[in-house]
Image (cartoon, rainbow, N blue to C red; front, side):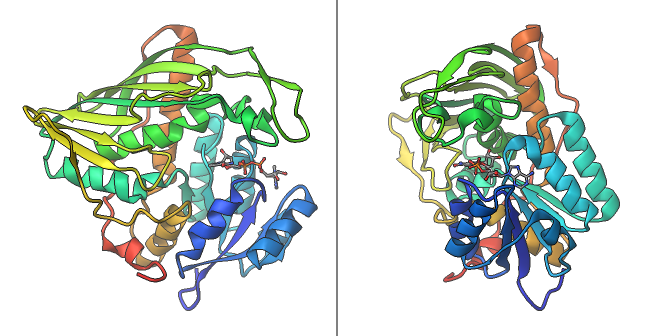
Length: 368
Ligand SMILES: NC(=O)c1ccc[n+]([C@@H]2O[C@H](COP(=O)([O-])OP(=O)(O)OC[C@H]3O[C@@H](n4cnc5c(N)ncnc54)[C@H](O)[C@@H]3O)[C@@H](O)[C@H]2O)c1
């Protein structure tokens, strides 16, 4: 990757999530969106017009020597094949979550990248936001003592309420566990280290979901994955945790994310956001204290990509890495599997916690 100009990034998959990447990457002068493609050329044209870059085709992007990074924003089932094609073309890859829809595909992507000498980065990167990085700093400083227990919960009615093609949310790689679980499990691993074992109960596989909007409105989608999973996680450190992930509620007031330790508790905002609030309560105290965020929370999706570009240039490990995404996928698939086996599933993969954020990547933001 040339160092005398921004990394040139081409988007493959020009759908719903791209608007977040347009604003998110615009914060980082080290990243330049240069082109986009889609199976539907009209979508690519519309995104190109909005973003001020070139509409292209997947094949053109892959052979274009001026493109450094392929940003994979297709539905989950295409993440692995598109990533593999990009790696074969010698591109660095950053993909939306999940890394792939199976362990075997995810492994193939990581092995191919290692062989080709290119990096794989993967969403989510919300753990690099001000809220979760402040929580990480507090835990590392010992503010809550030794972490003991974690709870994570996400629930809502389901994406068939708002997405134009909610079928992708109910096939492999979808469902609340694979779709929103990555934010929660990535945040947990970043704070507490790798997961060793999981157990779970679930419901909703085979259920029909009524689409509320878009061209498919009025039709139903059959869920191939559980629509609610209630899981337990045992971390290598001995911490135990729970994950409640559901598309079967009208809403919920359950706290999104809490970590409890020997000296106190942290209440943390939604790990699907960059700006979650952080509150601390010491054992014995009657009140929660608002903790000022120590890192910027006005970042967006794209900070993980900018960190990867910076990491390539400075020859260090990037934080939203393929290895982290693989471990998270391994945990999430095991949670789904545990709903049918009824067993405690051992997690074969492990990963070190990514380095905490320093001034580095966020101080390179525009306007910083
Ligand atoms: N929608 C969101 O708010 C949101 C938020 C966070 C993450 N994500 C993730 O982003 C990814 C994309 O989600 P979305 O909501 O933008 O989906 P989408 O269906 O709106 O867009 C995906 C686009 O990819 C195109 N596509 C599919 N296969 C392709 C291929 N092989 N080559 C080129 N283009 C291809 C489709 O034609 C479509 O235009 C998913 O992994 C999802 O989990 C979405």
